[in-house]
Length: 284
Ligand code: PLP
Image 1 (tube, rainbow, N blue to C red):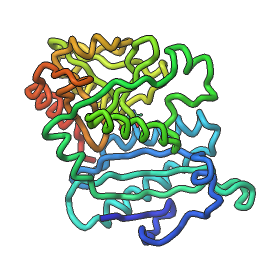
Image 2 (cartoon, protein in one colour):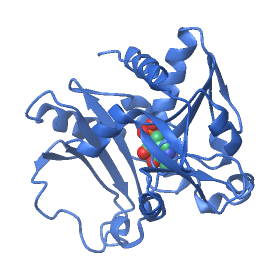
Image 3 (cartoon, rainbow, N blue to C red):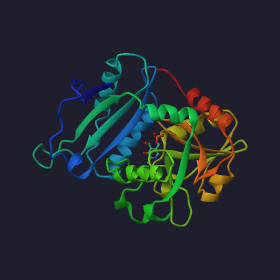
Image 4 (cartoon, rainbow, N blue to C red):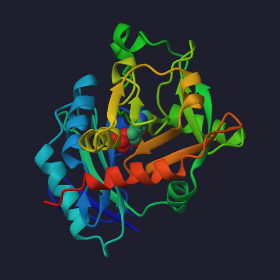
């Protein structure tokens, strides 16, 4: 199932072409996106997602995204979704067509059903492999033109990493630096649990600041957990009581196997983190 809306609030046919072949989002991956979970007809973490869209736009010197337009398009998708099932809601903002439209960006919101594979991973957990991202921890600050930490449409590397993980018999990848620091998954943030402490890696090493991780940390702090944002080493992944990959549509998945080695069973922690995430839900 798919529902497509433009920023002026009009519905469009998701099976029909709408993007020009010379749109720079298509030609060069020169654009940005967000993927938002809609649950019970409520767009979860919509504010933080639109804040991050604006942040990515600033990093890439794109026109400022039309926030009211994106809110309108998201609402139209949700209002026109045929039932109360969860939706993966993508918002796209590209540099548009060079010159001929006066530099107007392209933007739309597309709601899609959630893939079976994602639902299964939530239930059963995943096997992951660590993969070298080919960067060091100082690179993001030293070379901002590399756009590390921007949610750009150039996700070919991230998708290639997932294919490599599959080739190695796993479901997921965790990017690491050449010197053994943990970065993030190709489409997820890493959270580690030890006792009543939750940890994740700092965004300034060149990763995306996760909206799901932030929601879980907010809830965890309210529930008396200690939360830390600090550099993590590959060894920390194996020493944790629980290792989790979190992102908007998957919500929380536990990693049960890392680089072929079974990890401590974190099924109960998985239930707990999922409940923390759910407790952040505040209907409008
Ligand atoms: N890191 C990367 C590279 C991602 O692509 C994503 C989401 O797709 C995340 C982290 C998790 O972000 P969020 O929790 O906001 O979905």
